[in-house]
Image 1 (cartoon, rainbow, N blue to C red):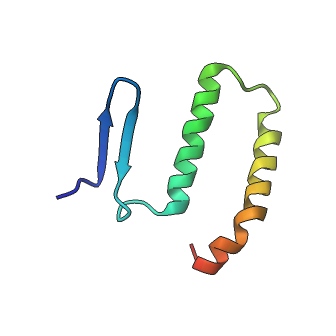
Image 2 (cartoon, rainbow, N blue to C red):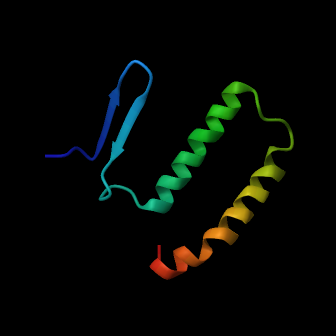
Length: 74
């Protein structure tokens, strides 16, 4: 039986497997975006313009992907 969330490690990576029954795609994308943000924060690669850049990225992403989500009602 497959676990809902499984975490494996090797010498270089953490490998996370999440059952599709546990989380929807939109939530997964938000989680990955949050992980990327945490990575950048830990590197110190973010300055005070982060909110402006973040809004620009979200707006651009939704403009490029809106039709997909409407089509599949995700």
